[in-house]
Image (tube, rainbow, N blue to C red; front, side):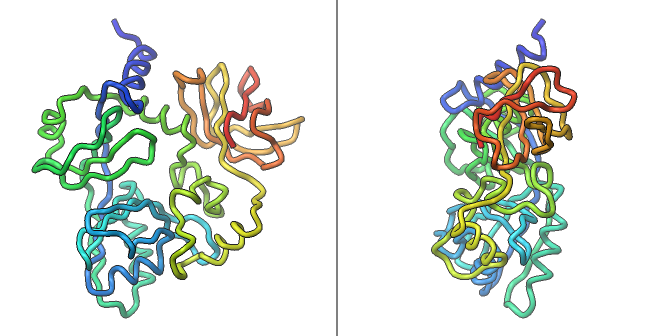
Length: 294
């Protein structure tokens, strides 16, 4: 009988870049912004250069508040000159639509959705081409993965011809890679650089957008007081636990997973004075943890 640990290790090996290939089932929220002013509107509220996308191209983007704090993240796909699809976490769909409607005043466009759709996360293999069973092919946030928006997941899985993997393996890869989940590893006051997504989500060559002043000021100053880090330990790391250095609280665990690479891994927002490679204590963890990135 295959143990849970054995299944995790097998799935993890197949999902990794260059692995044998596997697919994880999930869901996403789809939001459409369409109309003559769609490109200019999204360019003014999202962090990525979406107006510069060619039809069919994608960009990872954030919607910030006026103070530069992260509210929503998404993959933005340009479907046509005047039509975009935003692919987001299913729980974020209604809030994202509400935020877009809030900032949409007189532009000639429609915000449609959210609609929940099936999502397949393909790992270990190159991205497939568009086909009748795949509505959209998007780059995955977890390294080595591709997102496939599909209408018939059973048929799409069969056509891919790769085994299904459990969500636990994908979560292990996400945590090890330090990829945050907005609303889980970020809070209402999290800045872009604190979450470590500046390079992936922000264009510094486009025009103004919501929250740009704070993003630019932090980039110019080059300093934040805390940042998202990956912790590694030889025992399970409790989510929500305080992280301490020399007895003082320096952070808090937000996600955790068994890790084929580290034994156990977690994400925590930790003060910047704690260097990468340092050993820290975590409340409820009987052994030290180590900052492996950050």
